[in-house]
Amino acid sequence: MTETPTALAEPEIVATPAPGPGTMIAFENVTKVYDPNVVALRDVSFVIEKGEFVFIVGASGSGKSTMIRLLLKELEPTGGRIFVGGRDLGRLKGSKVPLLRRNVGCVFQDFKLLPNRTAAENVAYALKVQGESRSSIRNKVPEVLSLVGLADKMNSLPDELSGGEQQRVSIARAVVNHPPLLICDEPTGNLDPDTSVGIMQLLYRINRAGTTILMVTHDREMVDKMRKRVIALEGGDLIRDERRGSYGTE
Amino acid sequence: MVFAESLRSLTANLSTTVAATMTVLIGMFLLGLFIALGTWVLSWSDHAAAKLRIKVYMCTDATCPKTGEATPAQINGVRVKLLDTPGVKPGGVIFVSKEDALATMKQRNPDLVEGLTSNPLPSSFEVTPQRAENVRMVSNSIRNEQLPGVEKVRDGEKVADRIIQVATAISTFFLVAVIVLVVASTLLIANTIRLSIFSRRREIEVMKLVGATNWFVRGPFMIEGLICGVLGAFSAIFLLLLGKAIIVPAILDRFEADSEVQAIGFGWNALALLLVGLLLGAVGSGLTLRRFLQV
Image 1 (cartoon, rainbow over the protein chains, first blue to last red):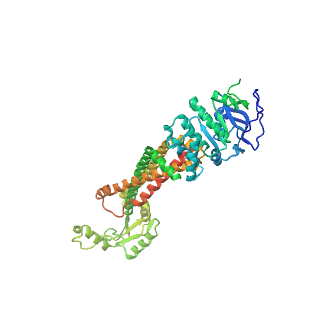
Image 2: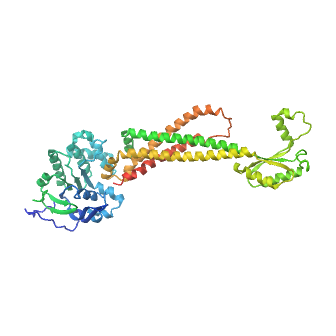
């Protein structure tokens, strides 16, 4: 935990420290312009340390999704540099992108599960792609599924699961490799409030175990309750970066 | 591991598998049919063209009143000259003596020969050109030599022209047909594969997001395409075999059974189909995937 108890009632802008060995993500003056002059991100800089839990908030079109796609190297920034786990994504060769993605767990609003595979097979796929042995897959999959509370639903297809359960499967898939970083793109966006609380508790536990979590969300109540670091975007600009922030300005 | 993945997706997407296999089947069946027909016709026209000979008739007393019967020296001179003429097939000069000609005539039309007191037939040379198309050229050059003792040079003009025309037309037609067919079935198969991949692009996106390498995603698709290609090609070969066993004997009775006229061997044809099927399946899906892998 890198949170310092110095944060007082007054929200403060976190000074951007230089990326060091404890840095998980660093954006350095990142700008992304889509083709006919649509600016998605404008000169955005911030640093996220290992073990942090950070919310990214902002209206639709504020650049949140672009930020996530940049982190996964689905897109290249127009300007600036991005570091993930100390590696400069601009210098990462295309053939190394799969390696990057195996070290970054992803959870999406629409779960992105493979529809014709059971919960266990969906989780196992993430292990298969990196050539994990059968026996190790057999060990790890039930373990992580029981961690997310789905030990009894291992052989269910995604269609047979509720939204909350599907999201748990996708979280299990994201963390089964023990990635140091977990990126969540509105993980509770499709879920009812009670289910959302369960998912947040699960993410909180994962964070406590040492995984850095970057979470994009629209869930005002959740952000206000958690009192974690909040980075706010608006129209492509970083407008707020608070240690113990809330969804809106007070 | 990759193989298991592809088997599973083959069975999971049975309808697209069947569609792709059928497409390959139709394409390969038509291709095989055209290859067989085309090579058969080509062989027939080659055979017909090979029959084209230039006849060089020597003088007899009756046909050349001035010079009289060709002397053995003249005949020898002509033989040497013919062997030297460019465009003549090596060993393609055959001498037919008066007596041979009469014997042949006796066999074909005994009535005509009966009661002949002397042999009115000329001795002659049968000259085979190296290429059937050159028959005109060769006969003209022999004619222009104006060799002593030669009465006339005949090249079966009209028949020759006709056969050559037909042969060229047929071979062009079949070449074009085979090319069109290959292109058409390639497009058809690529399209079918694209559909099957398009319906699974979400799946591919997910695979890429959990860190699958391009080859890990591509492998199962390519093996799938390969299996479709092989299945389709094998069914096509089976159908062709059936056709060969049932239809060909029925038709062949109507043609003069000439063992020299033959289509390309069935084994080669089948091998070609199999290879094309394999290539289409694997390369088709591999190439089509490229667009969807850019995640």
